[in-house]
Amino acid sequence: MNRSLLLAWLNRLGPLLALFLVYGVFAVLGPPSFTSVRNLETILRQTAIVGTAALGATLVIIAGGIDLSVGSVIALSSVAVALALASGLGPVAAVLAGVATGAVCGIINGAAITGLRVVPFIVTLGTLLLFRGYAKGLAHEQKIDVPPNLLSWTDNLLAMLGPHQRWMIFPPGVWLMLIFAVLVALLLRYTRFGRHVFAVGSNEATARLCGVPVWRVKLWVYTLAAMLAGLAGVLQFSRLTVRDPTVAFGAELDVIAAVVIGGGSLSGGEGSVLGSLVGALIMTVIRTGCQQVGLDNWVQQMITGAIIIAAVALDRIRHRGIASA
Image 1 (cartoon, one colour):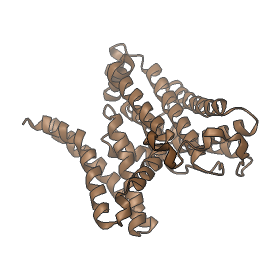
Image 2 (cartoon, helix red, strand yellow):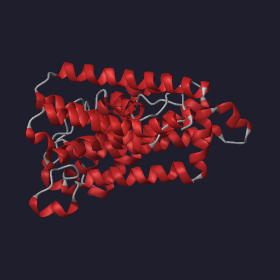
Image 3 (cartoon, one colour):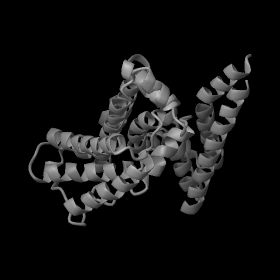
Image 4 (cartoon, helix red, strand yellow):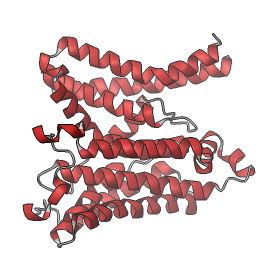
């Protein structure tokens, strides 16, 4: 087999093999309950928030950008949902408010990056604080309680399935993540916009010379990414019984790590929806497995950090291998 072809196949299958390996390790070391159907459902429920936000981060990283404001967008969107419900708006309007809040955040990010020509790292580092501060201000720096009679189905998107709901297989929030994963994958693979995203990430100067509207692509990428983060904020709202503007602190690291572990390149031009979801699952399996084995939280963080470093290192080695092939 050609060396470059072998490297390409390893890039595609590597994250999936890593998921099976990590799951197998904890299946052996952990209690019997780790491999139960109930625990698998819990892993999927816990993956839904980071996985949904990682779909948008996949677009950003493929386009050669970075978004450090994801966690703050999730928090701000969850606050928007809570305030919308508390003000008497219906659940559908509240969910739309959360996604629209994310869209506005994405437009701000995209406009600042393309209009001011400031690097994405600096812009999104600033908006990380901007959006988080605004979320705290909207909530008056306290938790928001929504009366149970106003929650409707928004409070059950990531709830454990009851005996009469087994026909659903997964909770509604997990289905939302999977549906949008398919939509984003189709967008990247079969549309002109998807080809433009890869072109901008691979070589922005060449893409511009070929007639790709780079500024428009970037604006849409950051807007779509923040809308998906807004949807993750809706799921975050559903997961918690109390709505807190300080939630999802540090979630941007989990989201970016999921994309990188899944094969996305921080250099741009590479990444996949499936890989990002697998990366998010790997992190959840590690977190759940460590908890059930009895390892402390600091050990979980060290293991996750080591995996991220290894994923980036493997990406660099693979690029050098392809260049020399």
